[in-house]
Length: 279
Length: 279
Image (tube, rainbow over all chains, first blue to last red; front, side):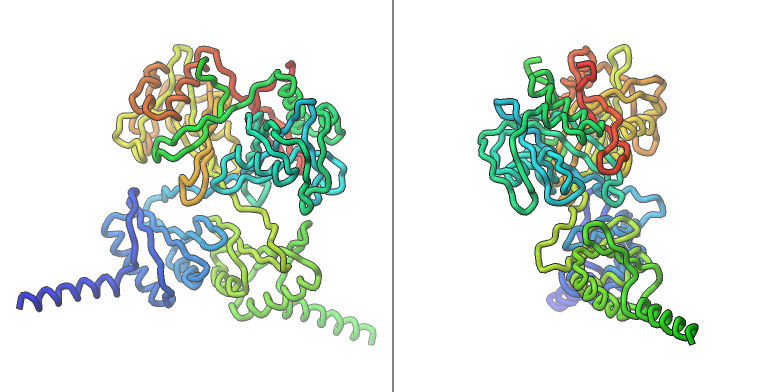
């Protein structure tokens, strides 16, 4: 008898788990993270979602996160029909969210900025590494530019600057300083841009230009770079060129990176400043 | 007769436009931007999409952009079935993309960084404005923090610092400098964080704290802030506190903003550096 009772009680629990609720875990902010593992019929999903949200509401839960990979794209429409909206998306998935309470949501915002680097690589002869690009706004203009590129997700600014110089011109470098940075808006859809001007010291000098993106690459006296009509015409480029000349002449100090950890997670991070510990 | 011919020719054009192709415009990079205005049946959409892509392929087009608002969420699934994937998403829409050529795509990346500010507001008595937060990692710890917040999409770093100090403590300020910045990774899903430590000069001194987020706010001697066990324990906080003390004692120079325009668009932007024009 005892055995039978145990079994039937266990079955009941399994049945409740399986039929009525979506598989989910809770986070530290009264949030719910739905876990979609297998293909699911849209109507079954809608029924489970309604029951689950009702249950989570009773438990005082707030935000609900629903990550739908491209394989489960059939569930995007039923989720939106139940009141979900997009939080963000990456190539292989969309992250949808829902807010259970009657209050305004306090979910964290999506990433808002793209980050780029422009590299000032100056050799011992006072020459700067410059390139002409095969595509983009400067194509065919004859303008010599500092090598530029986009900081990838999870990549350090310093690492991105070193990588781009190597890719575009085949030059090995050591990262020195961030000389300046620029914030601009609506550069791409509604997103903003942060561009860091970095100074790097070359540890090799023989240029091997990348064929796909770069038309030409060379070492050029810093003053010649700064005197290009295009550079002088645009305040931002002109100012950056003046900073580069001051740096070449040892009359400028930018921000240097210091390896630290973030307090909340003990993950490695870099703090950029011009503070010297012996100060 | 002439009139009749004109009419039938016009009808034919209308019919071709209407039946066979999706409404779209072209961009400067051989890209196609699909324009979905009205509700559309999923099967009709799939047929139109297939015909359109076939046509665009013949025209040498490359990337195809498909912005689907929440109202047209029914088209996400058929688009993915045809080979589209997510580029990014915002609360009200998902942006899907497709690459027509056989080559690897060269579509621009999604935004990768969230941007935050921490504000060092110091008065003429050498006291810093500090707060205790009602939620988050520091809730109930008794730690006094610099006011912090997230830079909104399209918002200048300097404006965000001023706004957060006003919101959290009711203090009016003038933006002075970026003292330092920190880059950290995987703080939120796979996104990275950039946090700018800003120095601001108060133009009012009476604190009116925000009730919803802030437990307490006060002016505190900078050294007392720096000597908190929590601050001393974490290298990043400790270093930032040292920079704040140096700044208070006029022994540190950060980056100041200069209003410029970006070369490609003539849009306003700020360049932050410690370069002085009279240098």
